[in-house]
Each structure stands twice: as structure tokens, then as C-alpha cells.
Length: 207
Image (cartoon, rainbow, N blue to C red):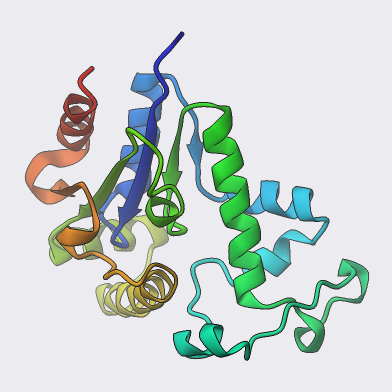
């Protein structure tokens, strides 16, 4: 039986994490799950994709302590009558997406990008959790090139986007996003390059 490979990959904005994930997937012959998780979760739940996109790695609207006191609602709605006022809770959406991540991992190998997958699959034997960072200059340059925007605008985009990612991750995992203690392996793509990071990750798999 072929060995199952489960990799979760967190990344700073502009660090090349998604490129690393796809390069890694090509070399290992397995799939990457990023935005695809939204499409699968929408199909499985019967909800429109935009319901998930609105809360994709976005911090929950209430304090984490609300979960312990039952202050969050769980009102599933027909997507035809979806509105901000009748939306299901962020926790319900997170649970649906987490169930999909576990189902995919049960079925075979994969690389899961973001979405607290390292926490969702934390009890999975052999799972490797990776976080990709890079020097801020390189991250800004990558965003400028990719989006065709000014450096100042790229810096703002990075700051705001990472604040949302950190809040979302910290809320659902009770760990610190980007902190080395939250992952098995942290790599700087400015230091090792895309291919170098891929080589290191593969070496950690013992392949």
C-alpha cells in the first residue's frame, strides 16, 4: 500500500507558500487543497460558495470566550434566502470546512493550505505541519509584481491580511499563528528559495 502523505502549510502573505505547495505537490504526485476546500464545502453543505468566501480565514465576530457560554447561534439557512442577518455562524462554517478537511485526509494524501488544517488534523499520525515566511522586502516585491500595485499599498495589504489570518488562526486553534512552536517546521523562502524549501520538506518526509 502506498504511503499516505499529509502536509499542512501555513504561510505569510507574499512568502511564496502557495507556489511551494504546488511545486511540492508536483514532485510528490499529490493534490493541493486551497480554495478548492471552499468549493467542496459548499457542495457538501448545500450552501453557496460565497457564504464560505465571506468568512474564509476571517476572524470571528465575537470573543473566543463566547463559545463556552453558548452565545453563538447555529442557524442553517436555505441559500436562496441567504442574507447577512440570517447567516449561519462562523463556528458552523469552520466546523463544516474542518469536516471536509478530515474527510479528504481520510481518503488519501494531500497538501492543505491554511484554514487551520494543522489544528484540524493534529491527531493525524505522520502529518507534517509547515509554515513559510520570508523577509518583508521579498514579500512586498512579490505582491507588487503579482498585483501591479505600489510598494506602500502592498505593505498595507500584507499587514491587514496577516492580521486577519492571525486572528482567525489564534481564535480557532488557541495557538499563535506564525510562531515556531505552533508547527513542526518553519522555513524562510528568502533564505532557501522555493525549490530549496521544497527539498527540505521532502527530506523531512524521509523520501
